[in-house]
Amino acid sequence: MHIRDPKIIAGLAELSAELQHGASLANMTSLGIGGTTDLVRIRKHECLPDLLNLLDANDIQYKFLGGGSNLLVGDGELPWVVLQLVRPEPDVVFDGNLAHVDAAADLGRMITFCAKNDLGGMEGLIGVPGTVGGALRMNAGAYGMQIGSYVREVKLYRAASRKIEVLRGHQICFEYRHTSFAPDDMMLSVILELPSKPFKSILEGIRICNEKRRSSQPLGQKSAGCIFKNPPGASAGRLIDELGLKGLSVGDARVSDRHANFFVNAGHATAKDMLRLIADVREQVQKKFGVSLENEVVVWNA
Ligand code: EPU
Image (cartoon, rainbow, N blue to C red; front, side, top):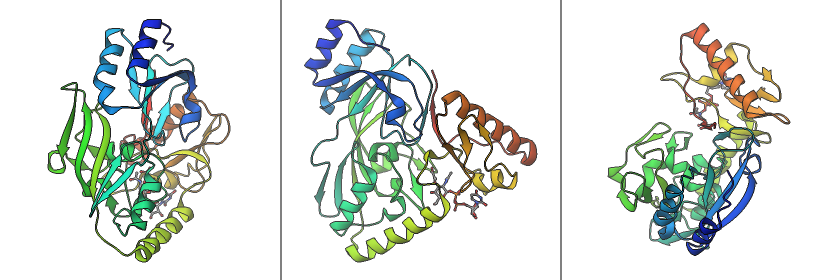
């Protein structure tokens, strides 16, 4: 999608947004897959309602991109523009045990910055790529913890009211890789309440999680993390592994040899390849185990 109308371009500039034509989503996602479209970078949260009104009034569809680390984007020219928050400086501010964090902050950097200020609890998420906003929207979790447990307050753009609102933690439902946010709500910032812990002991927790992750996941390769959610009481990775599907490929899309729930882009995989691989594996798991695997990865297919 190309925004060509000078009136819209001027309107975006008035709302302090930056417009970049022909951005490659392959360059903006950890899978390295995806076509091209215009990118609108948002500098001021408070301009978002007017900006979305401008896009709606001109029938321009949009999607909201976080860190692109849990995302499979379709190929070719995409029929919507992509919105992304510009990361402010600083992106984390402390007030006792509360960390005020911008949604555009990098999750890993936020965790280490909190650690340096003797605030812990999030060690399990170290090594999970992406932004804090992305982690929040899907309630990212690992090694027995999830980000939702620490949320005191969230500022977001609510699609239902078309306004920026603040929700208290108890107004949000956080479940396994799922939240009560609507699909088109946009995370803007969060207040996390983190337990005090000495830097050294947080660092030790981080070291242990890093080691576990390195030994079981294909970290050096292009992936979107786990492709499927774990079905109740089972591990999707183990089911796929038991079927002997490690290494199964469609084009350059490949089931990782290291962890069977990670599908990697081993070269120039397309979204079409990856979607076929996902469908093949899902079908085989369904046939053999009678289990219907649900996507964990978010798919933006035109
Ligand atoms: N297993 C296999 N073969 C495989 C992969 C796993 O037999 O190819 C076995 C393991 O040996 C283990 C069990 O399956 O006994 C579970 O594996 P693992 O500990 O790797 O955890 P997981 O359930 O596959 C979940 C999350 C990961 C998270 C890890 C660590 C989901 C879908 N996955 O993986 O999150 O990092 O636990 O806490 O919930 C992600 O969300 O993208 C993600 C990678």
